[in-house]
Image 1 (cartoon, rainbow, N blue to C red):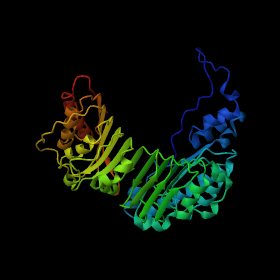
Image 2 (image 1 turned 120 degrees about the horizontal axis):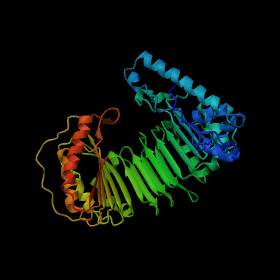
Image 3 (image 1 turned 90 degrees about the horizontal axis):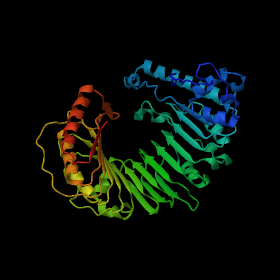
Image 4 (image 1 turned 180 degrees about the vertical axis):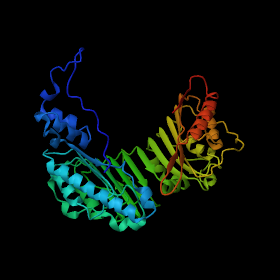
Length: 452
């Protein structure tokens, strides 16, 4: 098992002559020392037990149990579907389970602030007892991410189902944040958390195959952040949550109905639903008009017809983020019509994912004059310095008359399978930086160029 690198733990204080002075740290109350240790990894906290008798058992009361070893990756071996790859994963699963069991057996603390399980696990592992352990210790933040190394559909039969027998514990009333990724969550379980966790503020469900119709409602609901992504069978989401601030959805086109969301100021949608919004913008303008932050991911196969010349005006929108998947040949200028619909926009971020073989060279298209008086900050993420980006940048430079800063991140991102990848070739980044610096010569006096 690959474990995180240990941090250096300094016990003694030193005077100017480098002689050990009085050990003041060890004289601190247990509560403070446990708080300090809880900021370390589990391995780092455990190593402090050898410092002295005073420290021997302090680590067993830490309040953050983060079993995240996502830096271990066997995806390349598994992609070949070899017996060796499967064997490696089974060995690592066994080691991971033993590690978690050993820590939980040693843990003496009465409460837990955070409990995270992040590893490729199946329903044959000892997960039920871990959840029960966390619940009994009044866990506040609970995260299960059980399939982080490979996501092939053939592995769906191994997905873990959240156990209904764990429901009903009074300790769930302490839960403030719940994240379930690659976990089968039934509608019974989903509704239970909404109805029986009075302090639940954050709920995230990703890659769950059992949800069909979701209704987020309740008079005592305190939910502020809701994220539902990649739930293949999902057909509808109905939301009536007066405290909801942020909502994220990524998946197929479904029915999403906002009934009572007076505090909703931020939404993020994946490519399929973003496409639906762009094509039917006026139908969604009721709740869109209240937003301060809008984040859309767009697949631009036919985007020349996607953007209407005129959108309903979004008077309250201050921050707009567009994540674009494009071949690199078609202009990005049509998406600027969305900026025109936001007269009080303060910041705009464009994150680009280019398909392999994207085009770099072609003639620049002329940009129209449409002054924007409130736009202050513009950011390009995944900047490659290709023509379509230069066009978009020039449009913003020429029309954002109050622009204060333009940030360019030249990490080239490419749409790939099964995941998006980042190309880190030095020559590509150097070329992108050179073209970014050329843009700097076009800036108005007082506008700052930041190249990361």
